[in-house]
Amino acid sequence: MFGLRLTTPQLELRPLTEDDLPTVAALIPPDAEQDPAATTYDGLDSVTNRGIVVHQGYWKSWGSWRPESWALPFAVLHDGELIGTQELEGEDFPSLRTVDSSSFLAVHARGRGFGKQMRRAILSLAFGPLEAQAAITSAWHDNYASLAVSRALGYQANGVSLHRRDAGRDEMLHLRLTRSRWLSSEAAAQVTITSFEPCRAFFGL
Ligand SMILES: CC(C)(COP(=O)(O)OP(=O)(O)OC[C@H]1O[C@@H](n2cnc3c(N)ncnc32)[C@H](O)[C@@H]1OP(=O)(O)O)[C@@H](O)C(=O)NCCC(=O)NCCS
Image (spheres, helix red, strand yellow):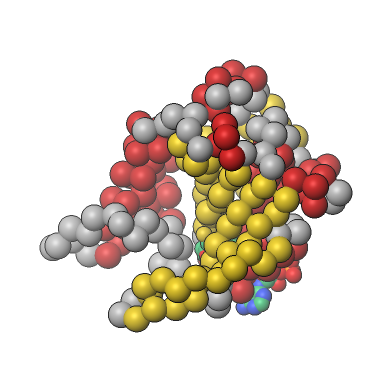
C-alpha cells in the first residue's frame, strides 16, 4: 500500500507512515475532530492526549484492516512539507461501494484551495480504481470550511442528526456525492493516481 501516490496540481498524497506520527501529533489543530470514543488519559494534558489518539488511530487503521472495514490515512504534502492528513474509509465496501472521509489541514495551510484538492484526490481514487458508487461525509452545521469543500465537489444534502457536543448536543449535517454526479463533473481530471495495482487485493477487488 505504501507505494500508492495521488498527485494534484499542488499536493501529493501518500499513505501515512509511522515516521509521520510525531509530525502529525504536533500539527493536529484543536478544531480537528478526533474519535469521540478514544480513551482520554487522566493526568496528561490535552495536546499529549490528542497526540496519543493520532498514534492509536494509525495503528488501529493498519492493524485492523479488512476489505470489509478499512480506513486509509494519507499524509498531505505541499512542496515536501506535511501539512495535514486526509483519510478515506470503507465499511462493508465490497457490498455497499460507499466511502466516507475525514481530514485536517494545519492552520497556516488553509484558505488556499488545498482542502478541495485533497478531497478531490481521494474521491478520484474512490470513484476511479475503487469503483465506488457513492461518497458520504458529515460535519457540524457550523463547520463552514468543511461544508464548503463538500458542496464545491458536488455533494448534496443527505439529512441532519443530533449528536453530543461538549456539554450539550448539536446538529451534524450529512452530505452525499453520487457516482453519476462525480463522473459528470470535471473534478477527476486534475488528479494522477500511481501504483494502485498492488493495493487492489486489500480492497477485495
Ligand atoms: C476542512 C479543511 C480541511 C478545509 O481546508 P481549507 O484550506 O479551508 O479548504 P479550501 O481552501 O480548499 O476551501 C475552503 C472553502 O470553505 C470556505 N470557507 C472557509 N471558511 C469559511 C467560513 N467561515 N464561512 C464560509 N465559508 C468558508 C472557503 O471560502 C472555501 O470555499 P469556496 O470553494 O467556495 O472558495 C480545513 O478547514 C480544516 O482543517 N478544518 C479543521 C478540521 C475539519 O473540520 N475537518 C473536516 C471535518 S472531518
